[in-house]
Length: 497
Image 1 (cartoon, rainbow, N blue to C red):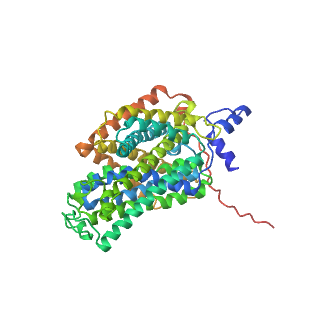
Image 2: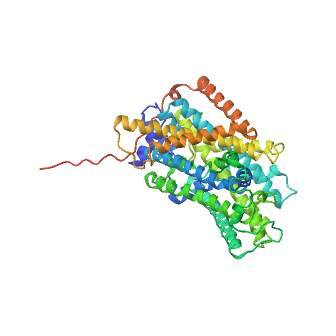
Image 3: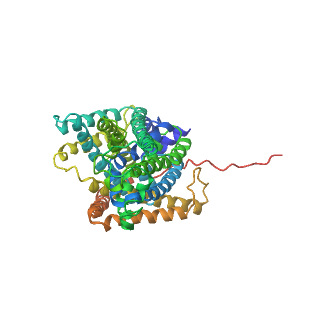
């Protein structure tokens, strides 16, 4: 029964009810539900633990010093509230397209159009950066091979894997993420060993210890302004965790899988970031982190491991592969939902015999091929620019998720609908405060000159989307998305004689 409801809700809005259409929907436009709790948990972990930790954390530390730990705590708490709001909607409406369709349903079709395409834009930017990073990492081992060769190879490999069943994708992401998580745990354990037993290189300028958190300018060496500046990178680091909501349309049992993933993943991500950076800044003065190579290399070298650069390279390559894999998946499923709403070409709404939206995978592969060209002209030190643009897109999507959730809760109260199976806590105060924080993050991007360009790019992008909607979207695309409500009905006790 659940499968039948899912197929109906994925049918094109306003479509006819002919037998031929029903058969087409069952065969050619329905995603397979093949993702388990294990897959979804690790997919969300993998998408939110990557470049932001392995590379971007050094930039955040340089801006805020030890106060960056507070920034990650605040950002993690805000992201958790976003995920609870998304989780409530995903359990109530487990559809592919996720927050794009929720925005269309509760805020209007224009909001759905802008939200969906902004997420695709975010994934495209990050994916191009990731494939470029992958080519740089491979160049460490094979310096004589041109970087574009690696980019082409990884695009074709991951595109081919994404064209297989979603279960194959889930397994691949599980093992990619397992490597990353194991590396992080090893780093935390290794750092703790250094602190406990005093292993350290003679090159260190300061002895390891918790005192390093306060002895080099205090907890706030760059003041409150430094803490604010770090949010541009901190929020980028959490970007991608909304993949949990995208998986709802392909989860084997959304009402069981989504709550478990939402409740555990954000906390784990927060612990990984805070523990890792806490250990780092206890081992080394904060102003030395990233200046003498990767933080991972610094820790492994401190343990006396001569192969530290090679170990790190293997880890970051795995991280890049995982990130690219998640980018292709997330953008593809949102494009699938946009096609169902009439906000993207209908070809994106067709799926292969394996239940995979193959045209969206092909499109993402085409976008990634741009990386082959840009790889020759983009300098390797533009991480902050890419991160700030991606942060704008990410935070915009999160604001739309929260706004959609507020509109849904108001409709539930107004119409007297059954309460959600997975309600967001501390409603409505937590949602209001989280929206206010997200607005602050966007304002921070405009406050600092080095990230201000993200607001210009974002404003141009949003303006172009509004114009595109007005010019090209017609028919069903101008209607609110119709989503089946799968909330469990209230039990009714009937007295019998």
